[in-house]
Image 1 (tube, rainbow, N blue to C red):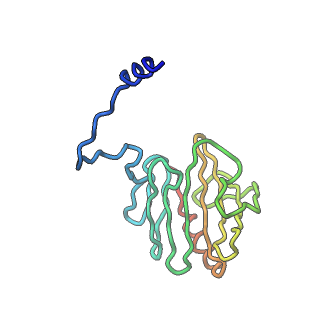
Image 2: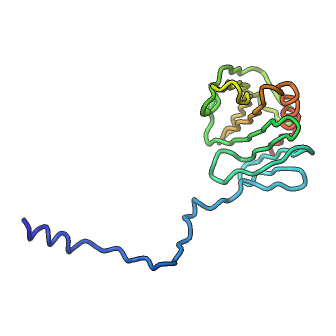
Image 3: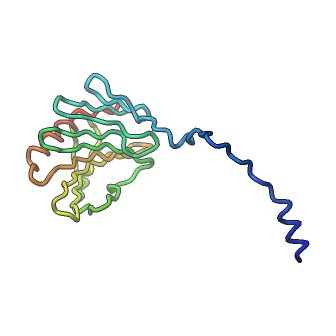
Length: 174
């Protein structure tokens, strides 16, 4: 038995030692490739046929490719956030959010300027009442589903919703 164990150990291939100070490049998945570009007051997605305006008073940052978040925008005056997500496949309910429960959904004849397809509208109520309310707009396409979200502080609901909706009106699906 001892001889069999020694033979098995001697046949194991040893891994080469890594020299000190050698830095290996990160795997391709770890590279932070942006989802699109921000230029001339617009975000334009590089994978999907999508663009949205970034009006004065709003800041924006792109998401990272191969993740659902495509762009996040923040309104300076109301602290309202617009998030645009693209999920593979089509679905008819909003994607779950940590710390928030979708308490209202309605698939009615809703439309938005710039969009010709009907929308599913929804509201996500946070478990912490001080956190922003999330208003979702779901737009299924052939290969993916858009989830457009307004994150509005509870103490600025009315102006935040107006500001967020004015941005969502600029969405264009090319």
